[in-house]
View 1 (cartoon, rainbow, N blue to C red):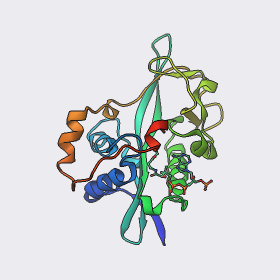
View 2: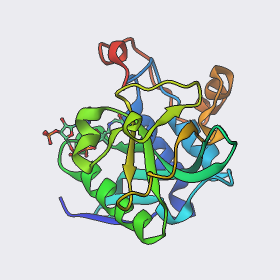
View 3: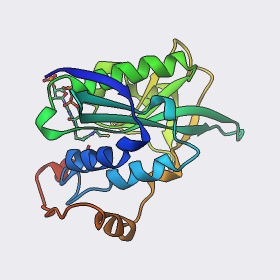
Length: 204
Ligand SMILES: CC(C)(COP(=O)(O)OP(=O)(O)OC[C@H]1O[C@@H](n2cnc3c(N)ncnc32)[C@H](O)[C@@H]1OP(=O)(O)O)[C@@H](O)C(=O)NCCC(=O)NCCS
């Protein structure tokens, strides 16, 4: 295994969507939606091209990470631009070998250099705490519906960057896809059987 990280090229798009489909398939629901979310993001003004990376083993793409611009809006209706990480996916046969961590650390460092303030994610605290993410409640940021829970996390890209920012978090519209849209998009990929699995009980 010889892993390298590089920016994603347009010619990689379909390969990466298929890789994402493999990574998420049957994990949080029978089938998955993340390959369509990724597809839609690329056409969205929220997509951050400079933070779109693939991990390769030689020439084969085995992982991908992307970010979109998101907003925190406070009670005075002031808007603050932040980043939202995801989807991140690693091909199942390559998971737990440190590739996800490479993609996370590489892109976080780049986001910091680009001057972004903070990254928000919805994900497993056990995994993302290792990169410094903590419950967004600590920064007085709630979801768009005013909630806080362990999976909703934030990372300051420099010390105190979220101290002046509080309010509700609004992710890019590109995360919203319907079952019908997913069914239609699925026709562009090789058939895969959907299953109900234990991992779907717990969510991310
Ligand atoms: C999440 C994911 C990107 C991590 O990539 P990876 O290359 O396997 O991660 P790493 O090898 O850097 O880290 C592996 C470690 O993270 C843990 N881990 C990975 N995914 C985890 C998860 N969803 N929840 C908790 N722990 C997780 C592993 O148990 C392992 O722990 P260890 O280091 O203590 O042994 C990858 O597992 C994946 O593609 N999963 C399916 C898609 C997904 O759930 N994406 C995240 C939601 S956007």
